[in-house]
Amino acid sequence: MRVVADLHLHSKYARGTSPKCDIRGLAEGAKIKGINLIATGDFTHPAYFQEIRRELKNESGGVFPYRGVNFILSTELSVIYQLNGKTKKMHHVVMVPSLDIAEQVIDAVGKFGDLRSDGRPMLKMSSAQLADELFSISEKVVLIPAHVWTPWFSLFGSSSGVDSVEEAFEEHSRRIFALETGLSSDPEMNWMLSSLDRYALVSNSDAHSLEKLGREANVLELPDVSYDSLVDAIKSRRGFAKTYEFYPEEGKYHYDGHRKCGVVMSPQESIQGNLLCPVCRKKLTIGVLHRIVELADRKQGFHPENAVDFQYTVPLTTVISRALGKGEKTKSVLEEYSRLIRYFGSEFSVYEAKSSQIRLAASPEVAEALIRVMEGRVRWVPGHDGVFGKLILGDNISKDAIDKKQSSLDDF
Image (cartoon, rainbow, N blue to C red; front, side, top):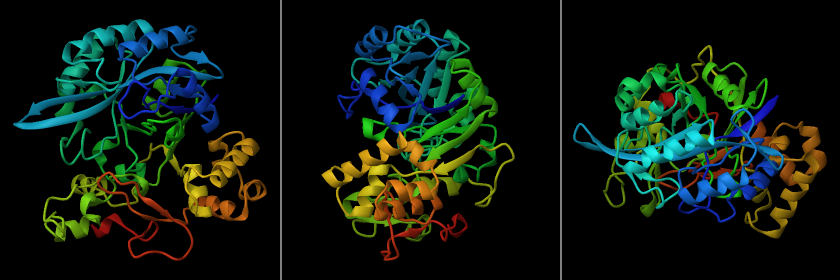
């Protein structure tokens, strides 16, 4: 069975998250996007856990069928600790196969932080301690380092990360079998590190609103929709068909930069400038591309033998907005979006369609824009220092835009 899975997102109990992100809202949002296996998110929050228990009454093989989609128990946990005299901050995705195990996780991690304060709680413990607590509860608990290249709160982040999985998880590193690449990197960038070949690369939305669901996701062919089948497919990569990916330039930490001063720089440029903002002379936020280049031991374009394929997508409202020159919340953009969803059934179905079908369903401007995205004929003003990248369509390209096909990591 073909499964589109988004395994990392947030509920209304997390800070900065839409109040529509409850079980019912997530189910409806998932169907519009074309997701049929979706995370609950935030199960460690006590109030949300009670809601999960109330709404997800049926269980089958570790997943919970609900209103036409399947839920899996998932949460994100943040840790903060000292390592070699430096403060480390990392986020982790945790999945569990049952409500009983979820409750045991809540009891265990609740000793290290206030679980009521946020759907993604901050725990005063190390990544290795977290792993020890989780795996002592059940061998079936899955721990995946989240958005591993983001400058803050990530495994390899330039501001608070480490240089290897082993450094973070110590003796538990052998139990880590997957890494979440995050919005500002794609699998090809991660393939530049031979040390990552042993890990499956997963992609999820980390959504804080229904509109952001599925901005990245995983496509799997499973014998059945169950927790064990999902975990086995990710771990072995058998049946792991591909991931849907942001263009990494779209992510808000792809390039180096300083948002306050409006400065965005390639790694090469920031190195030449001693990593300082040319406007205020303060240190730049070092982006994902720069950090990957620091640790890479391969050239761009290397393709590991067992690597999972990937496909670029851009949220439909973003493409329509840029094609029509209208805001994403305007009536004309929302009407075009609704027309495409009615025609294809879901957002991901648009990106699986043929060009001829898209031209039949969409206005000429939107059809051309979608086909450009699908064929990689787009450019970007790269994201930096918390600012998402800007999609450029057509041939009138600003001097700040980056040609995806012409830029090379070998230049940096």
